[in-house]
Every structure is written in C-alpha cells, then in structure tokens.
Amino acid sequence: MQDFTSARSAETPDEIWLTEHLPVYTLGLNRKDLRMPSRDDIPIVNTDRGGKITYHGPGQSVFYVLIDLKRKGINVRQLVSAMENAVVALLLEANIHGLTRTDAPGVYVQDRKIASVGLRLKKECCYHGISLNVNMDLAPFNAIDPCGYQGLEVTQLNDLGIHLSQAEAAEKLLKYLTKELGY
Image (cartoon, rainbow, N blue to C red; front, side, top):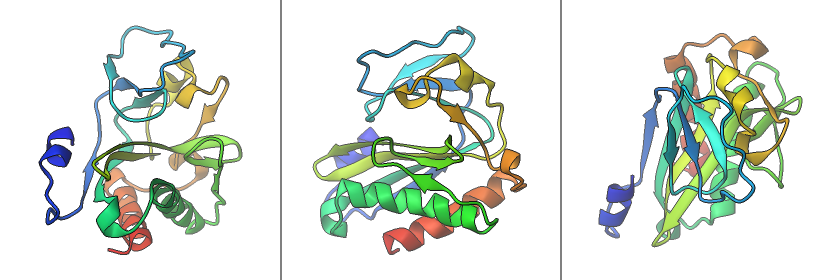
C-alpha cells in the first residue's frame, strides 16, 4: 500500500484491495496509553495507520481503500462515512441496525463493534481501510482494548444470525462500498 501510494500519479486509478490476514495484532500511530496484548502467541506489527490497536485474523474481511481523495472530491470524514455506511447497509439487509459514532470510527451493533476503520493519508491519497468481522475467533480481541477502548466488546455477522461465507460477505460489502464511493 505504501509503495502503491508513493508511486501514484494523477492518472493512477483508485483501487480497493480485499484481504484476509493470518492472526496479527496491528498497532496504529496513536500509541499513547496503549495496553499491549495480554497474550504472546499472536504477532504484533507496527503500522502507519491511525488509531491504536486491533486484531486481524481468519474470518475477517479487510478492505484497503487506495483513493486519491483530491481527485475524488471527498475529504477523510466523507471517506470514513462511506465505509461505515456500506457496513450499515449490509447489516440492514438482515434487518440489523448498525450505528456509527463520532467519537470512535467504525460500526457498532448493540454497543459491540463489528467493523473497524483505520486510515493513512499521503499526498492527499488514502490507504489502509476497514475490516468487517464475518465468522472468526473473537477471543484474541479479549487480550486488547480494541481500538484503545477498555471493555469494548466486538461481534461478527455470524453471531448476529447473518450466515454468509467470507466471499459472500466480501462481495456484498464491496457492492455497497463502491456504491457509497460512486464507482
């Protein structure tokens, strides 16, 4: 992502990358008052995205949005809202009401986080993105303060009765994400 963003020109098309990670804790740039994981069996990787700490692992869809915000005519807040709104729309398909919070980016269902957002900007181009918990082992979240919030609980589509495969969930979220972003 860093190389792609650094090498971009004014003509470089925007891209959205979908991935699924092996178990890993990622530390964002805001490491003040960060509680490190209480377990040592999962690697920790420093990243250059915003935010504090989160967990990525199998059963979670991670979308990296590589967008030239200036060319697209949007700001960071609009991009975050578009990503969050895409998750909210996916949840609404199953009559589940996802909420966003101005004080903590991401999407929440009954005060439990289902999607996390972390971004980085360079030369008015964005990278990193949003992760959606689909059907994963949530236990590693118990070893951290997700996104730096002590006691924050997480949830996933499967636990909400939305039984989609990883590919189905990713396809649906990509459809909503591209619609929200006007692609």
